[in-house]
Length: 152
Image (tube, rainbow, N blue to C red; front, top):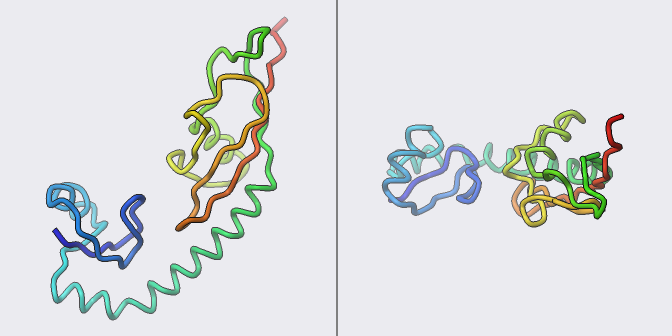
């Protein structure tokens, strides 16, 4: 089924893109949530009228992503986690923890946009995580995982 996207959909496309998707995906997810509209002559004409506004939004999103990338790459996130003597953590550092820490610092980034090496960090050390921003832009976060001091 051919659809026209009303909003950016991760893994599918940006606002204004025309895509071919499974009819069930369109009927059950995209159309009810108003993420897309069916590919019809009327909707295509509406898209053509909005092309200029969509292009401006894309440009604004791209410049915002570049600024965010610079700010994120300047950050260094530190986590103090309980660990054994060999540096293996009792638990792990995952993308949800990174998203929560970034939110404390004033960044609104969805956890599904954060890629942690091997999906979770299970040892102490220095690591890098990727944050997908916009289009093909990615920021690289520096992470330091330390062993927490034992409670006395």
